[in-house]
Length: 456
Image (cartoon, rainbow, N blue to C red; front, side, top):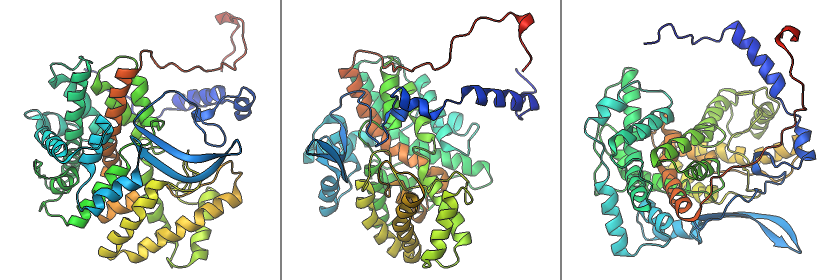
């Protein structure tokens, strides 16, 4: 057993880090001169084509006289507009998570009997191996639950006798298991962490007759109670986060790692690692933290001058985390509007009214209106900026009583469906490992003998 592991940053680490930072920094102008698309996107946000998919599409531009013109954003799942999909099940007053999951996985909207059978299938799979909570989840709980989720996913490999079998039928089995298990793993990981910091421990088993959203609220709350409006808004949030065009970071990670021929658990752990980052799934936490900081400085939530001053302070790297980013504003693809935010906003307002949070919702609306104008006024813009879905999702989770530690895991609970669809499609359609190219911009150098090298 290794003892006395050094956790602190030593002076030597500081020295070596500084050297590495100086050597690794690449002049941004070189990306232009070599015509390299940073982040696999050009300056206008258009992505580099890396594959084909049937699963989903993000539409943010239209062609007019041979030119691409930004337009209001649209999102399609298997060819269906997400706005129409959500309107369909909301108008008929039913939960939509299972229905949309069926569509993404199997390519068609389910009939009534198909949906009932799929609902039952997921319900039967909502179980973990015996003593898994005690032996895995309760061991070394982490404050960042994405780490706990990754640990659980990788450990499930050891409980699967066919873990390495990447035949289509076996991967389908594994994906359905994980879609059913993710809500349990997320909520139970939070319960374990909460208990580790001194709170009471309770574990509620899921109920097969309830929807995914209802089960999350039931498992999370001590009294297992919830209002239907709460479950409906959470259901909608999960659907809007379920998939996003295939080119997003975690779905691309899923395709890249799948193309290597590895197992399902390794693939999903890699996707979780991608989603954990604040530039991807962690953005809604940053939005909530930003607003909490804003409330400390803005004394009048209706005073647009105060709010604008605070936002300018963020852009000037004087406020909040000094990163210069107004979180929840802007998107890699959308220039005019994020359709997910448009669908979500109406129900956020209804939930805010039901929860007595109208004034706080008003603050969000003012920031939503002012931020794009302020950003455009201070920075060189290659494309427009707008509110993205993360802007409101953290506020919704807050109103639902979800602890902040669960915000990004809720994204994972939804996106595991999209990851599964992409993994299955990659297995069927792709035959090559994904291997991009990089241009080396370091000049050639002759070898220097040890005796002739200067000390750094």
